[in-house]
Image (cartoon, rainbow, N blue to C red; front, side, top):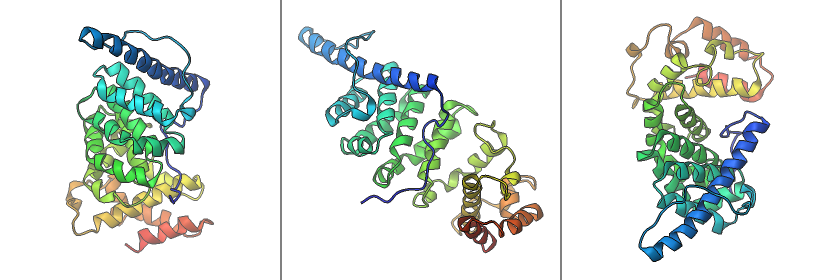
Length: 293
């Protein structure tokens, strides 16, 4: 029996008809491509060659939530068989959409789909890597999938660090790390990435950074946002106090995020004292965690 995880961030939480229609169209396109590719492969096999068709048509495929194991297996096979970035992107989009439904998350894992998708993080184009990260993000919504996806954390971190600042690829990697870090099972695999994450926090745009970190530690902030900020601060302090930590205080200036959270910041201490009167028990628990470390 799977334990329900705290709410995590899905691939894109921005509503809108245009985005929804685009997702359906792209998802359908991948399935069309597979049908055409499969038939073309059969015809080409008789001629001693294999080719991927340039266009798609035929009947409308099933919606992502109604895809059965056979259809998902064909998509995974297509992903393994083609080197065409456009086909890879569309197949990954379809798998990502189908992974929004819990039953498909288990099916894709059982079909070895996680390793196939994870393999796309290595030598593919940035656009393909982004779609692979989005798919893994949706697939990381249960514990068993996280156990397999965690082996790619190093590759995810490398992609985040090497991607252009504020790019879609960088954002996709950050979303996946957000889901994987909901529990503390794999924090040890991310600790060396903290300097990079702090850099993004201070240098990135509003898409990747917090507008002003001290402002988040306030009683008027949305409870979920406040709780995430406190958990982040508590985990950072705990890891910095860990004797295995490779970071030193000398690496950071006095006005850095690190200094505010991990040194004796008067402003931060005042914020925490105020939050001890917050009505939410979980919030107060995290404040106590920070103060006692």
